Structure formats: structure tokens, C-alpha cells
Amino acid sequence: MALAKLGVVVLDCPDPRALAGFYAGVLGGTVEGEGDWVDLNVPGGQSLAFQRAPGFVSPKWPAADASQQLHLDLVVEDLDAAEKGVLELGAKPLAEQGGSSFRVYADPAGHPFCLCAC
Image (cartoon, rainbow, N blue to C red; front, side, top):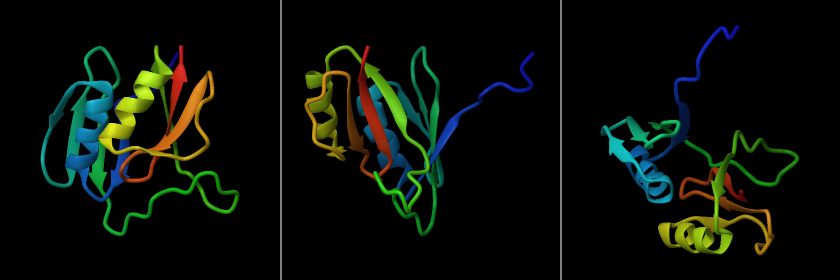
């Protein structure tokens, strides 16, 4: 028996509305809220929240001496099309791309995420 249910995954960032907009472009859904806390409600999926963090320092990837804090695995059907889309939205490659099963990027605030082929 579970003791709890996952409510929401929260990403610290310098600009919650902007980062929620990036992920809305990637995952779809609606952005709600202003200021220090913004939610992204994804249809049929787990919601994400974005929290303003004064003094935010983006994670480093890969770095043995610095924590990446977290990363998201986003499942896609077409890696090439998804890559084109996330780059247009402002993602930055974190590794040499072109793999057949996953590719690694940073969102506009620097959080690492992977596009993973289903």
C-alpha cells in the first residue's frame, strides 16, 4: 500500500511563466498562474509546476563534481521531429546528438531533459 500519491513535479527557475511556456510548447497543455508559482496542466499527463528561485544556478550536465538535480525523460515517437521542435522552442543540446534511442538537451533555464524514442 502506498503512503502517498505524487502531486506535482516542481522545477526551480528564474522565470516560472517563461519556463512553463517552453514545456507547454513541448508537452501541450495549459499554463496557469503568474508570479512565483506557475502550473502546467498537461492533458492526460502529470502536471508540472515552476517556482521562482532567487539566485537560481542551472544544473551542470554531465559533471561529476556538480549535481544535475534532476532530469526529465520525455517519450516521443519521432526523435528527429521532436528535436527540431525543442530546438525551435529554445532548448540547447547537451551532448552530441543523433542517437537512435535518446537525445539530451537543456531547457531554457538549464535543466537537463532527454527525448526518448518509444
